[in-house]
Length: 321
Image 1 (cartoon, rainbow, N blue to C red):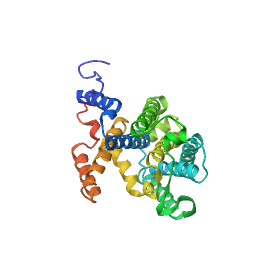
Image 2: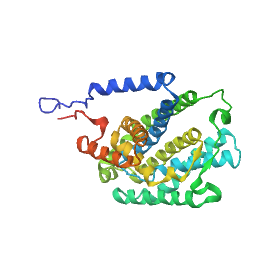
Image 3: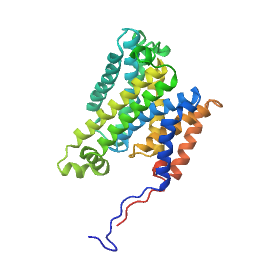
């Protein structure tokens, strides 16, 4: 009932968010032709890791499942592209589909192992699985090249037969992939399935008592997140031209986790902001010191103290009854 004490008001977002979104879109769409190759490359990295961070947000922010092994699907798909394109000279679409399928199937297999546990147990098991993948990439030298990794992944324009050259065309291809993935994830989290995930995040036992198969929803969330992470891994392989165990290390997993928590979990936009912040700071700070991880850690602590719900949720006005 509506009244002085019973009126429900919708959540209001401060105006700066709208202005920031507009500014971000303008920079992403119109900015690259006016930027140097270095900054175009950085923006490309931001978009790739934004896809990865958004995919983790589906799992962490919307389902409430904290994973430290999510980067494994990114790494496996990148390795698949590298192996198929260099050792087997496979075609472009074979490599793309193979990379996405490999990462998605792995997430489907891992999901069977982790979807029945929650909280810190979920975190630790996913961490252990991620370390298994890192160990395989490091020790399975005949296939992965070990610590030397795999180099020589063909450039996108050469492999796909596209009339592209230089960093700007590749950037816009990445932007299209980013836009498509972002739209699909937004549709998923805004669907009845997505609202069920939010219900599980808030109170799983109540959702179970209402008749929802919470295990199946968590499992599907894990697989969907793994599929989008695999897409980002494919794009990264073509962007970097080189794949190594570095992309499966705990440091890489922590960076992606930080992107989500720093930007604001459960928003999709927040992880994009977090990815941009981490990638830019990492490249700028690492140019001056090798201890950039300590500085990023300090920034994270300050952000958590000042904005525990992430940067994107600053100034958010909650609905009150």
